[in-house]
Length: 233
Image (cartoon, rainbow, N blue to C red; front, side, top):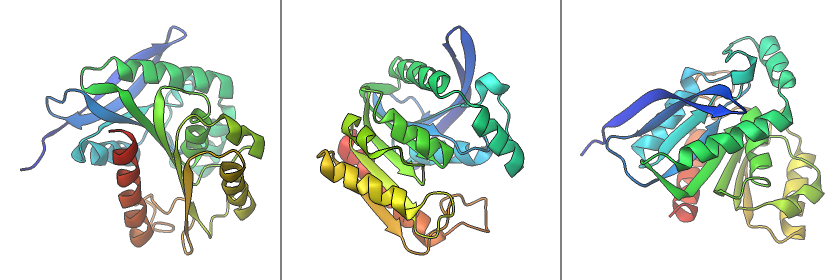
């Protein structure tokens, strides 16, 4: 039987600022595990909404907050503009907005408030890894090719992590990924790093034929679903 998916725009507030977001969920859903999805530097575009829909088809509530809401909610296909947007983000304000997003998500009837995870891609992956060390409401975090902070920050991880890395990534270095592995071991934190030998940066993005790898994306998606099902009940 095919699951009917409902998707729509929603809004929540952070510091009295209205933040736009996108939700995809099975029709008449009640008490499902939820995944907060943090977008790439392009903004809240159709690709990231499609990922929310994929999660909904697998029995999750997919929720995408607009990380650029305070910058006018821009969406772009221009790498220079995307870089400027990313560099204009305030890490403190984003942290507050994502805390507010989690609170909003916990209050939705479709969501099981004790089974919420986070996933992020590129810029969003960096933020997802950051969230794993700051947001105790999150039970699992999946990071696709996000930048890795200093090793000592691994001591603050609050949930298991799954990190996907393409070995031909030109933005995230092997040294960063090795540091992540070392940090997980050093501080005894649950986590796994999966390397895709031929994967480039953004290998999961099927709207970018220059870097997309169907084989690697498929493998990463299966691992991601298994990880969330294991940790989100």
